Length: 413
Image (tube, rainbow, N blue to C red; front, side, top):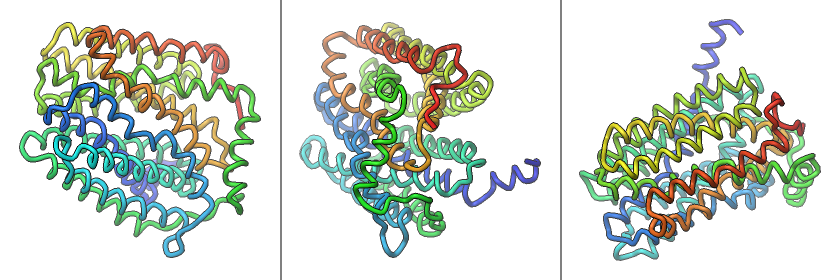
């Protein structure tokens, strides 16, 4: 590919859509985690309840259950992908506004319900976006398109997490959520204007085929159960530590603006750098070795939170810990996503990727739910040491299907 054609691809409609859809997928996530945690902390909600509220993200772990419906059926007026995507985005905007109109002190039940709806429609949107990206991009553009999707995803998280916390220092949370809902309007317009991708060969013609065939094909592979277990455990320590990080920062003395600026804004660029470094390193060393290297770095970065807990309110230490954690997390995510893509059969991309990404989200929900109890019982320092140690089983599973000597995990194509 020449330099001219390379820039034409970067500036193409397909890449712009991948970027915007990544933004649309990334924005809702932190509205039910970090921003909501800060709101509950301000309202005086107990730390254990804040930790349990991670359960509202359950739809992210069960989205494979309704993914076959989105593969099998189409919305008549916009097509199979655009139709479902527009419905999910409209419902997502409405539920984010509804979440902002609730209150953790006076309407806790309503707030929890609206947070669950945000997570459900966000998870549904993720299913369709993943399928659209796979079907819209030619094979040779998948790598670049996925990178732009990740950048857009991080921009959405940056706006919701960093921007949302900074705005919350100057306006009510209800207004913050209203602004976040409006930020999804360009994504809705993009869905309306972008073309429906051509139908993929082998599209399921019955609901039974859409549900059964992807599972049967996957479970017949060698080391299938080991790889599923690995997906569950590889980022469990990192997920548990980050699940309750916002109350941790506030508890040791940092302001919401400091958290929004250092943790979200500064951390964002470290994550972007990590993703770029991770992609280049994978090309040189292969997926197998990078899963080992990046997994060890993730565990070490989690241990650094224990150091921050001992040091306390000290901005330079916070910046250093956040830089290392986000850099290693960005590298780990790049290897992890590459691994999941490598074990996905192109005939069943939507359903199989939904299954794998759902499993990836389980630690973020179920293992993160008791983090409030654990932090209170162990103290912040002991809690982060525990999160470091629990990452070891996932690394050891690599010996089964992605040994250090291998250039890539066990082939399943």
